[in-house]
Length: 393
Image (tube, rainbow, N blue to C red; front, side, top):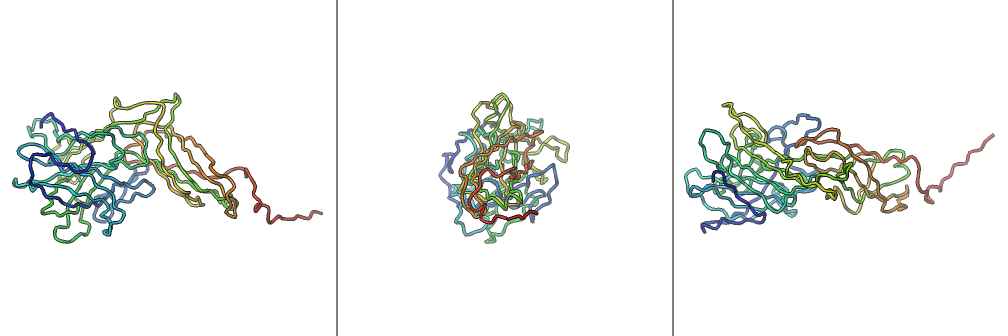
């Protein structure tokens, strides 16, 4: 496989077609996510997770619905794979086991043979194809490229701005073969991807890390205005803008994941204990930027209406680092008087957002927005139901 790569079609689980000794496993996923960092602030570990990781919760981001995984392995001297699509199950009775897939896996008979699990999420954010190459550090060691050592994964056609948190798997562990389905200790699993279902169990805990940056909007009402008016947000869109009306619409991401046993993040460039370069990285090649004048907006929120109050309501989008810096935040909303009567429907506010510098993967920038008009555009009858009489001298 030296110098070669596999082009994988995105879809449900499939086999490589050369054997029939497969057994279907119903696999269940649980996630732990790295924390977004604000101004490079440090984050402590959560429970039995590595430093800066916490139990996954989508918060103000979109829920991850589909997770694309690849069970890679070596068979007959060749590097092979089984792609697996995991779907979110809202009706699960097991807390945390929210993504499931029925996966046909081989019983690997070679001594010490293991699967190595890689992947990304959400699947729906990626274009028509993904390429996977077994990791080859291109050094003089002579070690062949293999999935056991890592993977080079290219994700194509990513929207430069999206309501979704695009992540890759940076560690994995199987558990539950002994009947204990409690979340395992993951504090030493960064950079480790080995998995064997017959001994590890059908539950998988995945560590995931962000390859995009976050842009969070804290939106609230001015206290004085809230005494007179109510606002219900119907939709929020983040639209890339540029002075010449041309923006970066889509990008490709080349993610090099380097497996290790040192509990180091496998997508961050570093040196190992022997001083050798471990070239884990996330790169967005500039020659793959697709520019245009009709960018796809990120629909951050759309629904029946989310009422604003005097405390912050969070909305969030993600964006490709080192691409667009200028955006328009387009908010559609309804206005109610203090008695709850709808007095203005389908209004639109547009706010210019400018980043002063490029954000990095996993970094978050917060924009605070307070709804505070300088006058009431329209009075309703209840506004006048309790007039005050002042008697002058």
